Length: 100
Image (cartoon, rainbow, N blue to C red; front, side, top):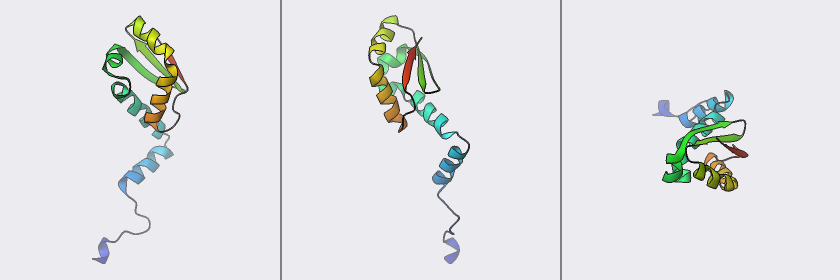
């Protein structure tokens, strides 16, 4: 039974993967992907169906909308979008939103 004990250099797989992602600078990119994939959950079905493209680059969320009315409405609620995205990411991943 003593063969099954962990040694000091062993760690849970989740911890090892998180360290590896951070070491290679991929942790932020993974969070960006989580945000993009959770867009409908964060903003609702109506907004998600009108959103044609979502990108995060250099702290800015770029949204391409197929409805000028929806784009106009969302532009008035930028701070809400920023707050929801950053909450989902767990840290400040964006600080601005641009609509196209």
